[in-house]
Structure formats: structure tokens, C-alpha cells
Length: 238
Length: 117
Image 1 (cartoon, rainbow over the protein chains, first blue to last red):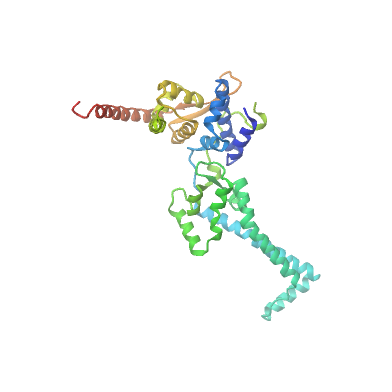
Image 2: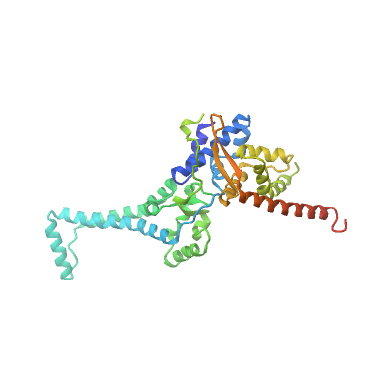
């Protein structure tokens, strides 16, 4: 058995560890039987690249689409994280740079009471701008990267959700980029995109239909290991 | 195989996959690779499928409750994942078998020139 092939197969499996182990175990058993029958070469040729093999062994199981409420909560969490960081860092910077946190707070309170602009320093504004830029990086690059590598960002992880392909394997980078195209949409278009999910049996937004991805309830993902299943990993394959 | 024949065979194989797999598993429990090779040999090569068709079909039938899976070593070093038919699967097999025979008989008459033959 080609260890790299199994590693690549495992890389394309998605979901909780127990699901990925169950998929790998069935795949490894199939390949082992083919090898014992002297048919390994033709079997691997039939299976194609590891991603196609992962599709073959993952497809067919029911994928529970994530409820809209949990998806929206997850999106709000991901949206809120950089804003909270921005507020926290800016406030901390204001207090630290002023050298006298009590005076800064009193001054800001006084400015607010007098309806004057608070006396922000250039440095604080620069830090706020830098943090805002980091926030944009988070939304555009960070979340895209996390969904590509792990199938989810913090919001989806908190809500027990994951992005997978329609066959139930990990999405490609291109698929993640397409499903995150919503970022470039303005208000009404974004609403239309989400409205698709309300009426779609797989709860797919319009861009998710384009990307052939969906968001599922991670804890309900099949298959689950059954008694007697061997532990399989690229490191202990022959 | 003539051009296009493989595609026709694939389409017909897919249509009969559930019936064929349930019939094999009804006789005795089977593991995936065994099913793959048995489908070809038991049907004299007329049902030729790939893993990408077999395993999704097995998973669908498992989720539907027609078959159940268990890992068994049976004295071997490496266990196999065996699929067995359930009571629901037996009922499904009977329904598919009846429908298949009705369809096959109708098609046979049709291919022989129609109702009068």
C-alpha cells in the first residue's frame, strides 16, 4: 500500500475524528483485499486520485444540513471576533499610551458629556486602523484558510458545524473561495444568496450551490465506527 | 466493447445495483471487495461497477436500514467490514425482485416485437 496515497486519502476525509477513522478503515480494508487478490494496481487505477477515492468511500451517507439559526449564529460569531478585538485593542492602547488610564477615562467621559470628540491620539488611530485591517484579513484570508484546512472557523466550531462537499469530503481551496464570494456582495444580493438556503433541502446558499459545498451538523455525520473496527493510519499501513 | 457500450452498461448497472447487491447479501454476508468482484462474476460480467458506484450505494442502503455493517476478524489478522441484510432489506429485496421480473418480462415481449409475439 502506498503510504502517501493513504495520507492523501485521509487528508480529503472530513468531519470528527471518529468519522474520518471509519472512512479510512473501510478504504484500507478494500485496498488490502485488492492487494491480497493481486489486483492492487488495477484497483488503484480504478479508484483514481486520492480525492476521488475519498469521494467514493464518503458518498451515500446522509449529511444533516445545518439549521439556518445555527448557521446565522456562527456567522455572527465570526463577524464579531475582529470587532471585539478592535474595540479591546483600541481601548487598551488609549489607556496605555496616555500613561494615566484614570485620566483618559475621565477625559473621554467629559468629552462625551460635553458632546466633544474624544481626544484620541494619532497613535491610537493608527492602532485602530491596523486592527481594522487585521479584521479584514481575518474575514477574507483567515476564515477562508480555516474553512479550507479544517472545514470551519471559530463560529462554526462553536455551533458544531462544518463545510463539506456534496459528497461529504473536505472542500478544495477553490470551492472555499467560491462559497465565500458572498463577501463581495452588498446587502440585497447577500439576502438573496441566503434566501436560497431557506428553500433548499440541503440548506445551500446560491454560492454554495455553485461551489458544490454544504454546511452540515458535524456531530451527526455518518459513518460512525462500529465494534471491531481496526485503527488505521498512514503511519501504520504496510 | 464498442464505443458507447461501456456507458450503456454503466447506466443499466446503476439501475439494477440495489437489487443485485441485496440479492448477493441475502445469500450471505459480504464485504466490499467481495461484492465488487462477485457482482461481475455472478452476472457474467454484465454488471460492471466501480468503487465510486458500489460504496455510495452500500452507504445509502445502510442509512435506509436495508443492510447493516459489522467488523469481523473470524480468525484473520485483519478484520473485514461485512454487510448483512436486515428484515427491512429482505422486504425491499422482495419488492425489487417482483418489480424486476415484471419489467424484464415486459421488456422481453417488447424486444420480441410487441404484445402479439
